[in-house]
Amino acid sequence: AYREDEEAVAREFATREPERARWIPAGEARDRSPAVNPEGLRGALYSETEIVIDPRLVMAALPEYLDENYGVEFLFGEPVSDVSMLG
Image (cartoon, rainbow, N blue to C red; front, top):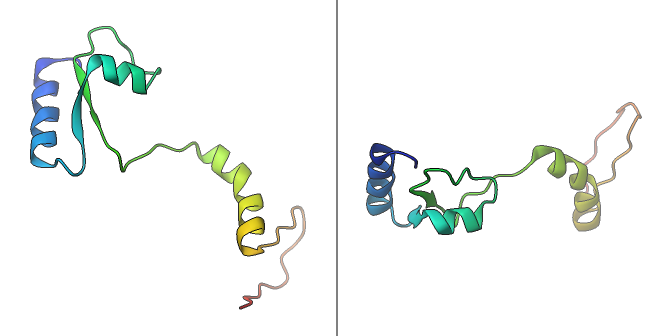
């Protein structure tokens, strides 16, 4: 939040939904996210349960993860002629 009204809304949300998010001061927000613009930052909402992922990183790691954990075999550059579910 950078303006008083934004802060008020964020604090109200944190008060009403404490299991979903909490208000953190500007210093903690900067510590948690180096990408945040510190100029004029009043604070932010922080959630233990919400995350942001980079879909490119997920897609790059997913085939290996599925193979190692579930035996899913990926064949890149090959036409699909059959899909079978084992187990």
